[in-house]
Image (cartoon, rainbow, N blue to C red):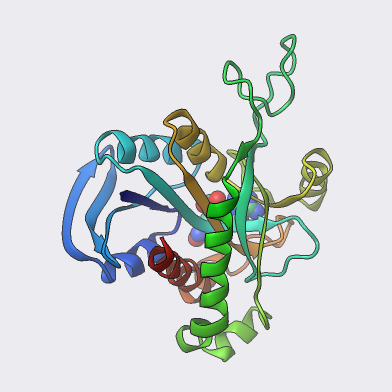
Length: 252
Ligand code: SAH
């Protein structure tokens, strides 16, 4: 087993790389791939950059050049489910590309990937449950040792929790409550929006390998969505996702 880990935040990749042994660096297509071991697993770690094309090309390199046979994608996302608070975490059990629309063509539904014929990339239940268990362990036991209560309080985070559900990806940063509500109407059970997960899920599907997508809610996909983003990522989100991935690697 060799695991490819893609992060959409440079900070979380740096944190994960700190705990990696036998590190080897290589640059391909403007990405730095870091190979080595974490928790006795062979890993290739990379900052994917943002957007579906960036994520898909990085995932393809991980599979074809580095021979990974499973993928984990982490980052932040805008929460569109009103139940979610900033700091909560979402494990995708389904991913949709919300900006894919070839429905003008006969027989193709909105969000359906032309020629592939599917619009939902579903993640195996066993995997989802393992990831949920890992995140719970992180949030229940490690969290306040890594991120001081004071910092959590600055972002009004009290008891972050993890949920599973649908994540929608598109090449747009969503910062409009109306747009978020429209997506939630069209995609039942939608938890959050981001810019990479469903692209990685498509690549994994087309190569018949499992993938997991794990996100920390950083904003509500409304007009306040960009406030304090860099500070939230550096002081909160990168610890949440890095810590959860380490817990997940212990369980795999
Ligand atoms: N860190 C940046 C902002 C990142 S925005 C900054 O310093 O300003 C792009 C990343 O955030 C992508 O990885 C995307 O997947 C995720 N993301 C977070 N909230 C989002 C939203 N409301 N809409 C779309 N993508 C979002």
